[in-house]
Length: 279
Image (cartoon, rainbow, N blue to C red; front, side, top):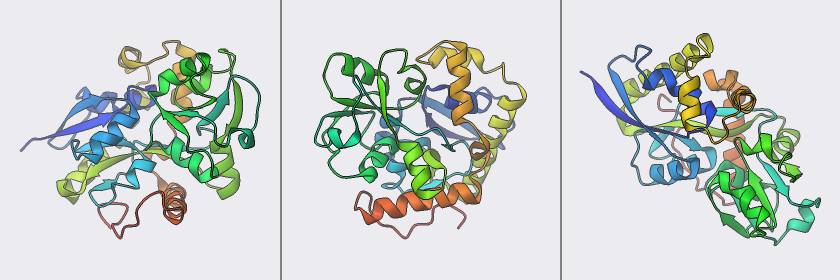
């Protein structure tokens, strides 16, 4: 019996690279068919909050609010070192000077915003907008600083902006752990067997991409904000790594630390639900 599931992920190169083989029937999926929905990460966060997706890429911040209904998968996510969100501004400044100022962010439930709030108090005057509009908003003087993710990390300097803080570097120095940005979730009511099959299929899809790296290129470019090959390759190289194949013990420790800190600050609710479905 074939089971059709909705799968949400972003149009960014790391996600289209990972899910290309799965969504184009290039791997065996043990009777599972996925119907993909590509949206920016904050839209995916909101869709998951409404329970509208069976499977989805999610910000770890959003997962903090979804743990009772969704379980984390071990494959397909974005976690690593040197890949965190950046605070940028049109002119050189420092974080102390930005307290109480307007900061453009890519979504209230993004991990980028969670890290900003964990960094310190006084950074809650935020203006929410799609990630690819933040630099334009800064040019127009609509915000004092911006919190950038995805392709913007590779292009902000050529657009004349200044890095104020690398929140990923701050996290790594403070915790010694990689930064958990986004994970893949499955609705708990799908059942452990289906969730296991999905996890295996996502890992197989990524392994296929590694073996056939040129095959996803047309699909990636059809959805990417930045079409330059060097930017696409840098994006995939930064966000797709060994943690994308399997979180491993270090990855799980990073997620648990993030949630413990966010719970302590009252930024996410506490829960007794296990992180993974099989626990």
